[in-house]
Length: 262
Length: 259
Image 1: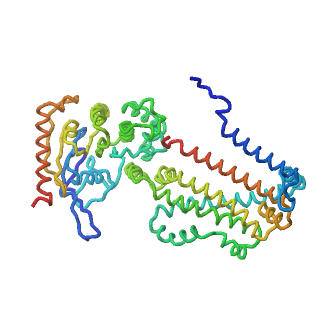
Image 2: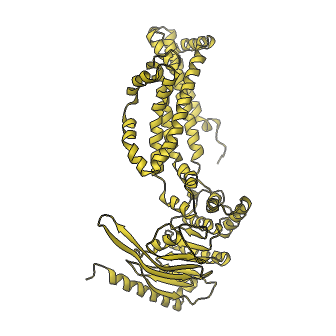
Image 3: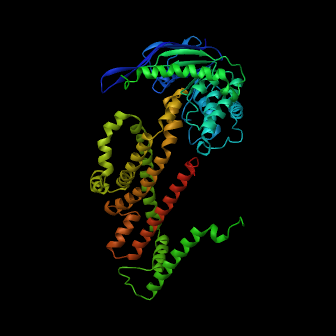
């Protein structure tokens, strides 16, 4: 197993009410080598907390997260994050931003960094935009830069935190199929977080469903479609059936915990 | 469509600016030549130019300029270096900010001219007291703007840097410093204009006998209007020059900003 999330719990302390609010309870999930795992859940299900924990950016209360058997103790070179907001340095060009992760991690020498920057710039389809600043790019191109920065850092596991949520519907669909092409070439283990069920089903090998407030693992779906996948898959009856099953599971959870329903 | 613009259109800022200055100077010279204004209280462009040449010949112009220039340069370098470094520390660490905020607020909002007699009493009437005055005038705008710049850093960028295992020093170099540059530059250009006021005020009230500020004060006491004007023109030019330099610096660092 590449990524092992083992009985992880997380509570937030509410200072004003001096009580602990659970965000994640006993979440366990194993992601295999080269597997594309998606996590879906309604807002407030703790999926972003889970992502931050795996990234090493958020301390947690119980359980372990390990990569290739090594428990994580903070951020590491074995992981790279594609953030929801592109989080690009506005004063650096596309090239400068794609290099940035490698520069910070100092694992590659200068010529390797240059080679990798060029390779991943082309792979994400930004050839010709090397000298552009983020403010001169569209949202989709900013996310491509964000993705290339993560891939260039050569992580074991790629963490993607709702990377397409801020894009318009058309760009999002296009980026999804682009991501699958890039993933097929980059061959990385991926943990992909989203609130869009059809995005999860379309992209992933398996989809984990989290319940809302607090987040518990409610179900794990194996997606039976082969690859490469095309966007027309989203209209396949089997696809719609899986989407519907996941939707029902989430709906149950939301209804069950909504305090406005007696 | 003609893509090449006319000479006038390409340089209209410079041309109209120069024309405006020349017209005013010419009108002033005519009034002066017709002896419509008293030489005791006012002067003419030609008289100022003569005084300028005279002071250049006997060396007082250059020595005064050197004195003021040195005072300003040393004072301003000290204040910009300490202001930026302290500003980043204060902006970054909350507890340092809370400890220093009553002092920063008090000094920043106080008219610093009020400190000048005190400084002269402590440091004396030589160049060091003037350097100190320039420092005091220009330090706080640089400090306060740098603090604001660090506080306004994008938390997403800090998070991204941490996720890629950035050390504190790497975060400082790649996020904190470049991210606060626009604010630092605003502070620097405010610091320049206040520092210039500091030089002049220090030399006028500082009890010495050197510098452009002293030249103006002396000219006023001796009813040498020409001498006063030479000083005023130099100070005005220094202000224009530094503002222009600060603008260029700002443009150099903001190429990445959206149009």
